[in-house]
Amino acid sequence: MNAYLYIKQKQVQWAKRRGIQLKGSQGARGERAYTPRLGQNLFRPLSPQARAEYESGKGGELAENEAGICKMQAVHSSAALAVNIFQYWRQFGQFDPVLKALDLRPDPNAALTYEKRLPIADKINRREFPVDPHIDIHIACPTFSLGIECKFTEAYSSYKHAGLKPAYMKKRCLWPQIPGCEKLAQSILNNDSLYPHLQPAQLIKHILGLKNAHKNRTDFLLVYLWYDVPFDAGYEHRKEIECFAKSVYADGIAFRALTYQELILRLAENQQPEHRDYIDYLTERYL
Image (tube, rainbow, N blue to C red; front, side):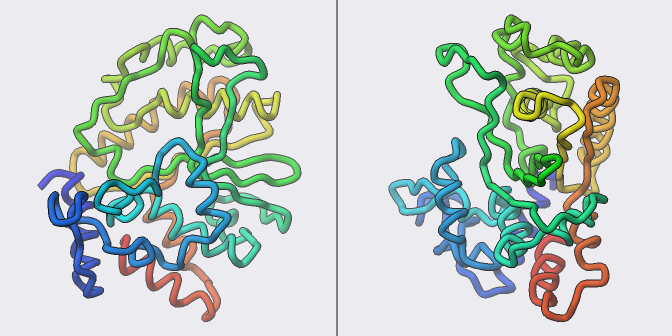
């Protein structure tokens, strides 16, 4: 069993323990890894605000196919995992436990957005850059913002990454003060086969978007949240993250990587009894 199937089968077994009769991606057809209803795949129902954000995002997470099934109904959905982790605290209206788990200072004014658009520049040729990068999770605080890119099975799938388009290198206004990112970007033009797990082109786009939004490299933090596996692929993934971090640290970019397992265990520490159902759900399903 490879890393991708390992994660997927863990989630299929979770559904079986819950008595959820899974469907294929096309209903009766396809591998049975989709919950019949979206709510069965979530700790709490998707809020109207979150639904609107996902519907306006580029990932099509809630777009139903002919069988009436959407991507977020997959038990191995990265978006469903992000919702299960973060929506709970959004509904409470406070993110101090999440910020603390990320080694950040608590802030009562923090606000979360899913699928946040991050234009890479103020003036963009839409023929060259038709779609802005969308960060999975964006947490805005009065003095800084936090962008979180979330990965579940994606890092271990057989899907090939396209790398960075040459148009990014031609737009010179993107690269002042970040030569390390520029050098890395040049190395993955059209093909990032050197990083089969990490997808650094996506992370570079998020850095450009966050940098443009803040006009300062020190006013934001990019977090890479990923799922570790007990296979060689997990070790290789970690080494790619370390290599990427060296490039962006040299530019003064605040970057941090954390596994979902680490985040869940940190959230579980010292939580009050009223959060027990949430913690039990996360640990039983994802650890």
